[in-house]
Length: 168
Image (cartoon, rainbow, N blue to C red):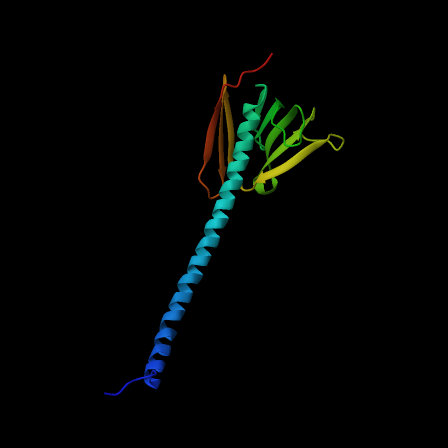
């Protein structure tokens, strides 16, 4: 019998053709997986950002002294006259959450003894948070505060803070 020590030319060509058929499909599935991972990563980053902002709003209300002002005009605003939740290491600060006309941006304003609209000589920190807000409603009933928030094209977010007691 004849002993083979190598592949024939036809066998090598057949294997090259098969690889030519399989590799593009394999490359396309790896490329699709990469795009899917990027999309998921971006969605998670947005979700983390919104969670961070709603946590900040929740802590602002929870850390307040109960002196809460709610205005429902064209800017929709929530002002907490005295809260211990400060991003800027203030012992006690006034925090207002307002919707700006430009891009309907939910904005956090922190400082001491300022009045809206803010004047140039008042020292405050302004932090724009979420754009394209279609709903920002706050309701207060005795010791409860209900917050409803919706960003354009997203599901609404709502939460309630209980145990808010107005200090005398």
